[in-house]
Image (cartoon, rainbow, N blue to C red):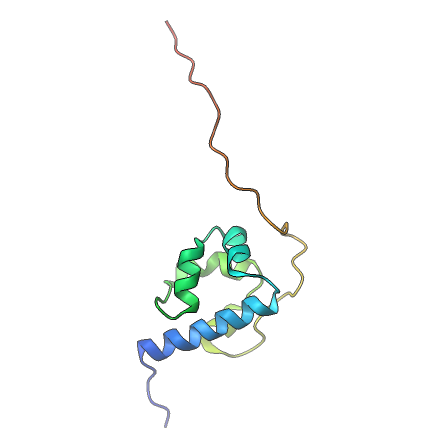
Length: 105
């Protein structure tokens, strides 16, 4: 009978799966950060098993092609699509609005 996995064991397995899936996409952590708009610091915490993300934080990871079933359970292929034709290599950084406020007299 398989024992229940501890939170730390899950964190370590999750971290290894995330690292492997990112490698399969030939991306770096900074590239994933740009594509997903998840801060690189957060991603580094996830891949080092320092922190486990909430499930709703993972949607951007799934959109770049990482298989959610693999990431959470270890089953299936790490990536859904190896090529990401729908995403630019690097997303442009968000620019602050340059609108000027018009004051009415």
